[in-house]
Amino acid sequence: MGLAYEFDWSVLWRQPYGIWLIKGLGLTIMIGIIAWVIALSLGIFVGTLRVTPYRGLRFLGTAYVEILRNIPLLVQLFFWFYAGPMIFGETISRQINQISGLNIYVAIVGLGLYTSSRVAEHVRAGFASIHRDQYQAVLSTGMNQAQMYCHVIIPYSLRLIIPPLTTEFLTIFKNTSVAMTIGVAELTFQSYRIDADTFHGLEATSGAMIVYLLLGLTVVRCMGLVEKKFKIPGLVGR
Amino acid sequence: MFDVVFRNFGFLMGGLWVTVKLSIFALVGGIFLGMLVGLARLSKKPWVYYPITGYVNFLRNVPLILVIFWFYFVMPILVGQAIDPFPSAVISFIVFEATYFGEIFRAGYQTISRDLINASYSTGLTYAQTARYISIPIAFRRMLPSLITQSIVTFQDTSLAFVIGLPELVRRASIVDNLEVRSIQLFGFAAMVYFIFCYVGSRSSRHFEEKSRKANIL
Image (cartoon, rainbow over all chains, first blue to last red; front, side, top):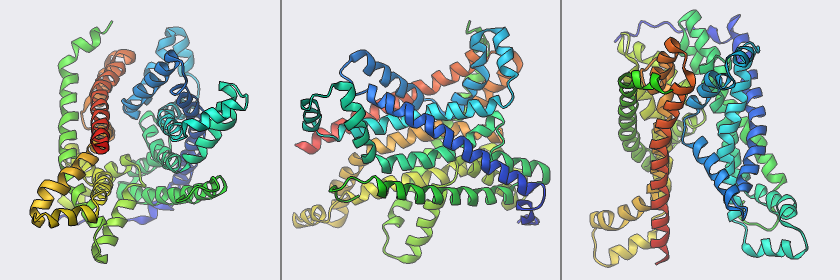
């Protein structure tokens, strides 16, 4: 056995590595939260498209979800980052590539789009779980289709689907790690960078895993509060 | 316009083959280990239940890329020499995906009610016969859509082995892209290949879901 490996756990706090990890965590949280805002708003919109009575809109919604769900996030990020600017032709593409922090913007938007397709599926399932009678009751009060969705169906189904959305919110923080492949210096990137600097990647990645775990626990705790606040009175087993 | 894809078609398809090979290893290993994990999660023995539950909850909360790196760093220490990306990736995928498959199996085992088993015994079937003819077929039918969905996820996940330099489809597309700078065609092509595989898979998952829904009504 070649157990001639000497552990050096100080790479987790020794300077400059401790700061790298903290900066990485900050970027992970920032990308995750902004991408989540995009994912939630787009996901609700697309999920609603998929249950409208208009065939064309339903088709658009379905195509959007199928395309984004069936292509790996890594490929999507590469496409937006490398191919995205080229779509606009050579001169504009060169200007776009000069934007500083472009990879971070691409990561946020790419991750937001990817997650929105998954949110849309949950939103649709939430709509499906609302009984037909309730739709008719809303319409009978004199609201039109748009008002019905805005004031009753969307708020109600959002409250129903908080648990699966919690899972997606957790997943979005884990998925920010894919952004390292386009050079975003988030937490996973930093732990890999520590390896390149010290050859102690094992300690660095182990430390990063614990940090992700703690981040996940915090998210679960927060979403538990949200769930409690927005739970629908009278529904059991929630 | 897609000439860059045609010129490098063999190279790219070789990458797809690596992707498929890694997926097969990951799925066979992950599903087999997942079955055991699912059983352990229902075990009444605390020394089985708690360690396995800890393992599942831990890995489900960390990003796969980090797990891939971790095994890539830990394997040389255990083996005592440098290791190829492929075996390292296979091990990380089996260990990681087994936690997801384990939860599917656990849910599947749980859908089999005590009453059903007792009813089966009362007809004179033995334990083995009950498993063979009653509980396994029913549980399998109920789990099939989730198993297919998770297999699609695994297939997409293999692209992350990119980070340890495994020459799979995305890595090869990006190698060609570095030489020829034709990102739209190359990554568009990779996206299309993944889409075709995964779309067919997700359609079949939905088909089985509909089928078992209809069967349950009868």
